[in-house]
Amino acid sequence: MTTEKARVVLEIKPTLPPSENPVIDHISRKMLAALMLPEKGGAEGLTKEVGYLGTPESGSLFEEGVFYPKVLTFSAISCPCGKSSQALAHFRFPNGVVTGSLGFHYLTFHREEVPEDDIAIINKLPYGEVEVEKNHLY
Ligand SMILES: [Zn+2]
Image (cartoon, rainbow, N blue to C red):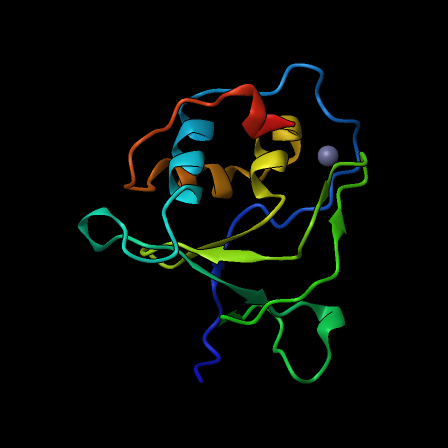
């Protein structure tokens, strides 16, 4: 198993309240298109992998910053603003970029705390754009 560090975006811990007006722009639409890639059998062979990203808390089994495909945990994860995700899942896109299950929430509701470098990487995702609907946000 490789221990190469993943190129991770949107792994942040927001400290400010969420925006009342989520940011819906081409960056949000590109990220949503990537997240909507199927896990298998995608058009043109494009799929995303589901797995686990090693964290400082995950102990010796998982190296920090390394993506482990097909490893799932069942602990919920919450944003400080209260938004929660059922599972602490991470996704790896075909180009190798990894993001977490709250990444899209951070991108839309905590945009001011998202690093510029992350925005630049998301802007280069080559999977098209998907229109953001209300059910993607809440
Ligand atoms: Zn939040």
